[in-house]
Amino acid sequence: MKITAALENDSGKFIMKELDLEDPKEDEVLVKVAACGICHTDIAMRGGHYLLGHETSGTVVKTGKKVRNFKSGDWVIVTYTHCGVCNACKNNRTYQCNHIHRFFNGKRLDNSTPFSLNGKRVFPLMRQGGFSTFTVCHKNALTKAVTDLDLKSLSPVGCGVMTGAGSVMNYLKPVKRKPLAVFGTGAVGLSAILAANVCGCDPIIAIDRIATRLNMARKFGAACCINTNETENIASAVKKICGGIDYGFDTSGNEILLENLRLVLNKGGKACGVGIGGNINFNTKERGEGKTWECPDTGWSMPQKFIPKLLDLQKKGKFPFEKMIHFYPFDQINQAFKDAEQGRVIKPVLVME
Ligand SMILES: [Zn+2]
Ligand SMILES: [Zn+2]
Figure (cartoon, rainbow, N blue to C red):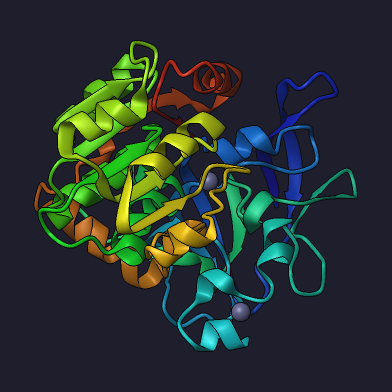
C-alpha cells in the first residue's frame, strides 16, 4: 500500500514522501499510526539513514496469520522488538534479546524491511517507522493499551516514559524514604521522578539547567530542584539537602553531572544512566563500598508487563506523564525537531490523524 512518511533530504530537512509498505508477514501487524513522539535517539540518529520515529501509538488494521493476541481496531503502543526465542528472551530479559541490534537498525531477521521508496529499501529505526501514516511491526513490539487517555497521548510510553520509569522501578528498585536524585530532567528524567514518587523516595532531587523542566519536576514530586546554571557546586548543594543519595539516575551523559553524581552517592548506593556515551567507572575503593553503576537499556522494561502497570498508575492519578506532552500536526515535524533540540518543549508528539 501507499503511505506518507517523513524522510530527511540531503540538507537534513524532513520532507513528506510517498512510500510503499508491504503487507504484514505471518508474525506482523499493520498499524495505522495515531501519533509518534520525538525522542533523543531520533535526534542522535539523524542523517537520512533511517525512517525515524520510535514512540508510536496507533490502531491495528490487519494481522498476520500467526498473530493471536491482537485484532483489527485494538489500540496499541509500539516498543522495541524482541525475537522471543533466544536465551535472553526465554529468561524474561527481552530487552537483552540477541537480535536487538538488527532490530534497532530496522531489519527483520532476514535483513529485509517492509518499507521502500521507488524500489529502494528504507529501514525504520528500531523496526517502528513511526514518522509515517502506517507501519508494519512485529507482534512482539506491540502492547495493547487499556486506558482512559486518548490514543495520541500514549505514544511516548513506548520509549521515553518506559525507559525513565523502568530505570527506577525495574533497576534501582528504591527502598521507601531514601534519597534519590535525577540528573537531567527531560522526558526520561521526569518519568523517573514520577516513578520515584510512586516508590516513596524522599527526598527526590531534580538537577537540570532548564527552569521549565525543573518546574515540571517539582509538580511531579521533586522536593528539591537544583538549577545547574545558578549553582556553583552541584555536589555540595545535594549534600546540603540530604547528606548524600542512595539512588542516582543520569539521563544527560554529561561528564560534569556524572562526576557530581559519583561524589554524592552514599556507600551501598546504586546509580544508573541512559545518557548517550555517559559512564561512571567506580574505582576499587568505591566498588568495595558497594557503589554500583549500570546502563539499563529501555529501563530493563518488558513492555507487555510493564506498560499495563504504568497505565494503571496513570489511571489512578499517580503517574500523569501526559502533562509533559506538546502536540504538533505531522506536517510541522521540522518545527517540532527544532523545538526539541533547543529544549523549548519537553516531549514533542507528532499527530498523524
Ligand atoms: Zn527513544
Ligand atoms: Zn530474543
